[in-house]
Image (cartoon, rainbow, N blue to C red):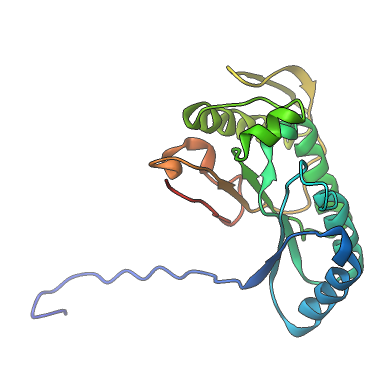
Length: 207
């Protein structure tokens, strides 16, 4: 009973996890590796590695993630966030599943719709408006999901991405957590921001 009114109470339990985020500066890679091992040993849950392929002073995010996963035992690691305009979703899905399999289910995936468009364009990537970037994020999420269903042919038709009968697989070792990074007045309204079967990992900025 609440305030004299009979009713049914509902409780929603949230599994909170705590972690840290780093930029993979080339000059600090040995320190990053050491700190990842400390974080793993001291009980932190998550490590996010920024992904800015156009920054000359930063190492490749996925190479760093693979190294950290190989040198830790329990830490979950994810790109914070993967630069989708410079990383094709079909190959990205395969990379993600492979890292998850090699690490025993400790890889999570957060996708970035795009930012720093002049730098992305300079690397040969597409330059998109906010609405186009969110649409591309939705399409990429659908492609990655399709790639994670072994035994089927992935077929997704979109304005920005399309795959035609691509062989799916491998499937990740666990329901990979997903998240998104996007800019715009209401970025989280995009269907592409929904999780891909695992916990939500959201990192957004509204402008």
